[in-house]
Length: 242
Ligand SMILES: NC(=O)c1ccc[n+]([C@@H]2O[C@H](COP(=O)([O-])OP(=O)(O)OC[C@H]3O[C@@H](n4cnc5c(N)ncnc54)[C@H](OP(=O)(O)O)[C@@H]3O)[C@@H](O)[C@H]2O)c1
Image (cartoon, rainbow, N blue to C red; front, side):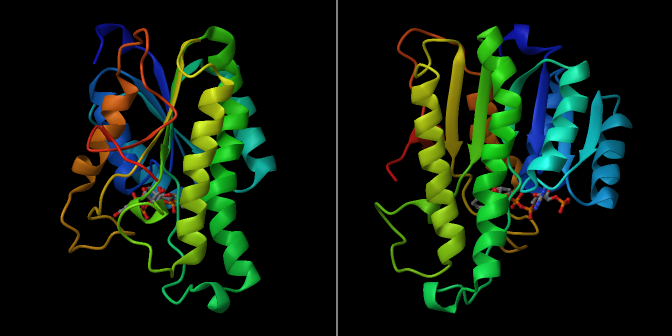
């Protein structure tokens, strides 16, 4: 982590639990002020208390990432006080287990797309402009191996989840291009964290949430160098095709 990142501000959607919390805690340990956006007030308070009792600077903001109005309200509150330079979009939900395309209801499709894909769009739309203006920002979107349609895992199923994550990969690549592919101080990347022990991943997953957070932290702390690669999907600090 470059020493200069200590004292900066990071926003983590879905930072109340799981991989998002592991990212928030690791960034806080490095002296970064962390702002967590999530939906459930009890989980949010628990996460913020866990961080502040360790002496870290952490603040919670309650919003449903899929709700543009709620996100704009929280965005105005945050941008009134802070200048974020790191944005981690970790808020996400799994689709119903039976979610093959023809078994997926319209409501389920909208729920998963709304949180997993439109939620990332809402967050980027609200928080990236200040980064673009300051020419200083790292945006990391949590994708998933299930969002890849090249390589393993192309047997269908979990349609809204998988397609939402492919959408996240596409949003990432598109926005990286729109912000100069790393030439204007903005890095935009997606991460497959691997199967992690979280409420979503279940207790038998092979990785801890801290291990799932590792590539996110690496991307959040990369030095801006000429020719830096961005707009990509990363797994274990390696570029993977999708
Ligand atoms: N775990 C894995 O094995 C795995 C594998 C591949 C990819 N991923 C991706 O990694 C990310 C994190 O997953 P996880 O396993 O850490 O999940 P998790 O433990 O279930 O936590 C999900 C987080 O997202 C928040 N969230 C859910 N819906 C929200 C909404 N509508 N508005 C705001 N916040 C919302 C939750 O907040 P509340 O506390 O308010 O509910 C919670 O903080 C997800 O995008 C997931 O798709 C996970």
